[in-house]
Amino acid sequence: MYAVIEVGSKQYSVKKDDIIEVNKQKLAKGDQVSIDKVLLVSDGDKIEVGQPYVKGAKVEVSVLKQSLGEKTTAFKHRRRKNSHWEKGHRAQLTELKVKSIVLGS
Image 1 (cartoon, rainbow, N blue to C red):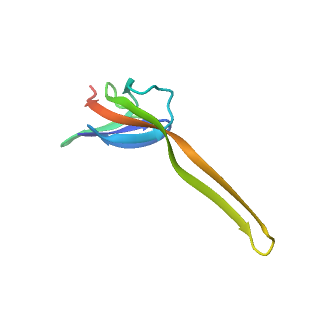
Image 2 (cartoon, rainbow, N blue to C red):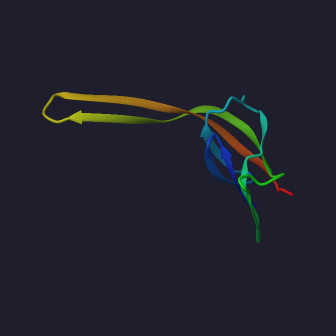
Image 3 (cartoon, helix red, strand yellow):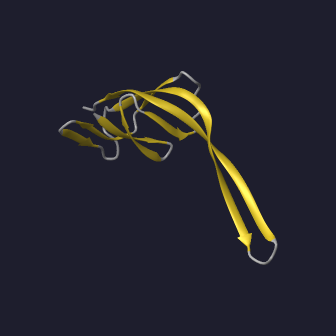
C-alpha cells in the first residue's frame, strides 16, 4: 500500500514506515500529525485518485526531528574582471515518519 501526499506544496510518494524530509513545518519533535491532503491511494490492485484529494483518506505521521539540509552553494565568476560572488544556503527541514495510511470512503 502506498499513497501520494501533498505537504507544503510538494508531493511525496510514501509507504508505511517511510521516512521523508519536507520543508520546515511548525511542529515539535514527537508530534503526531494527520495529513489529509492525499492525492492518490493504492492498495494492491485498487487505486483511488482524488479530485484533487481522496475523501476520507489520511496519512498518520510523527515528527522525528528538525534539521538543516546539505549546504548549497551558488557561485558566479566574471572572466578577466577579477570579480566573483559566492553565496551558501542550508535549507531547514522536518523529518517525518509514516505511521499508517488510512483508505478513503
